[in-house]
Length: 447
Image (cartoon, rainbow, N blue to C red; front, side, top):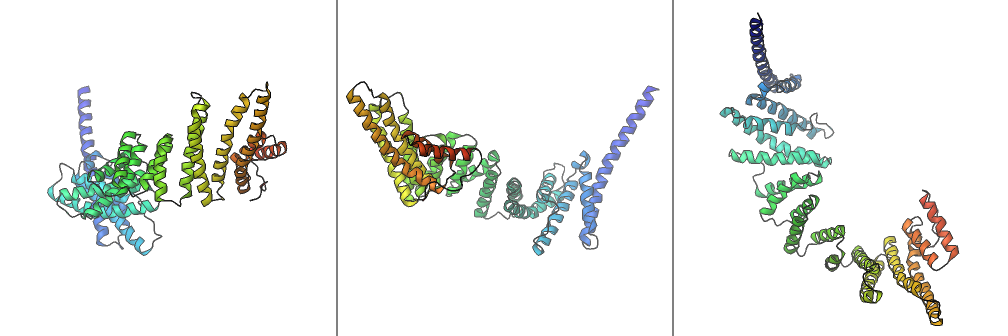
């Protein structure tokens, strides 16, 4: 009895599977008929297109339909038709919306599935490659729209698919909208660029490398490749591209600035001075470059000042060299932009840091002898003069922004050093206001 029941179950299962296969295939064919009805009379049968979409989507949920090249062709036709109609409406009414934001990609992938189906008949492959040809232009147009909408991820996917379409069309000896070599290379570049904007660094890298390996004359390719390899933590590869690009485009400043930013991010200060000096030669009126170079020398000065492995006597020549170079560049920056808060603060900070050398000598001076007391008095007088020089720039900065915490902290520290209790308390109150989230209504010093 059990054997009979199991036999019956097996028959029922076979009938059910065969029925499912037949139903999925029939549904796909029915979707094709709905699409044909729509194409015959788009205005009279407008609902047939939506009906075709519903049917083909449902049919392709079944593995049986997924194995049919014809089902994928119908899906490609349905989505391509819908998108073409809606884009035609947009040309009349720019405010019209697309009901399927990814229809171009869906159509392309459907045609690709049909074309690559090992069971596809010759005429089906022909229909699929024709569909890919139509969809390629749609992919590019949609990609541009996605870029304008700042949807960089889907813009990248659309452009990437347009290049895949080109490869498939060329393999089939068909025309591509990217047949012109310049347009093709431009599309590769824009695809790489969009991948970078979408933070798909690993996906974008092969497109930049394709152009690089072709021997591109575009500096933008070198910039893009450098940035992506940097993002991917390939420091050696990034520097290799940077050095090649700098050699290939010696007159261009963009890679020079990329090099400067890279060295800054890595804290490789001593290597920066040469690059910045080159940049200044190219842009002698760029005040920010002088400030940046001043900052580098200021940092080198500060690091050396705090170096305990050398005596002050040993460090003195280099300390003076770095301080003088920083002052020179800060002064030029301020000549070009005298009301720049950051420039004034940075120069004041350098001059104030120099007084640390005087403070160190004061701390080491003995009061046990008359000579020691005399020297201490001389140093204290010199301290007041040098701190006041720094205060000129701190005061200017405060007049430009009475709520900058760095400037207020510098004023508190400077007035404490010269023992000006009244102004020390004034700026201590002002910085407390800022720390508590408030603002000082006006500056203490006037510009």
